[in-house]
Image (cartoon, rainbow, N blue to C red; front, top):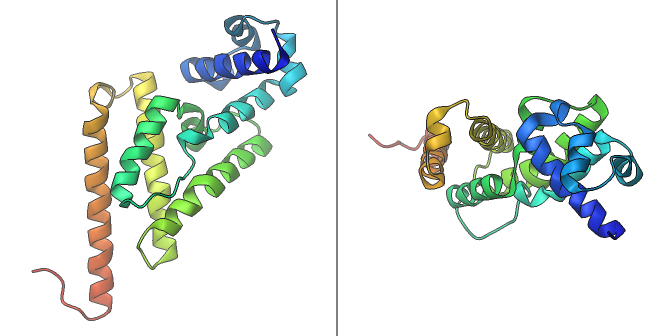
Length: 196
């Protein structure tokens, strides 16, 4: 097995093991066995289990990375949800809701999430208030993280059983409501009468 193939096999196996068992419960022996290689190769290619975890998140960045598209925030949220559920957003979700790695690694992961999703997503929103736009982006990330984890653990039966389309519809409705509320607040602040 070539070095590139071995590395790819370890990343794939680690992504599955971390998603199924969590960072602490997934052992390097389990990961190596799932990849069909010697456990010592984890240290060789990634330095440590934590280094492997960071590499998994980096490799799965397409599941959370903001990709500018000429669509509404609601439609983009649908697209993002699909990517999280299909491409395995669980490592990123876990970083948001239950830090499992060292403080240094956690800060690196949060910086990655902020630079590649939170900030560009907030900048794409039509809200002229940058603080409110940033809050909206973080709330979307928190919602997606909770959904990804709930579906992977089965802790919320309706979330686990709901179709991707049903979840996307509810999220889009929430985002539309938030946008409408922001617009009404701006109109009221400008002295413009809102809807009756």
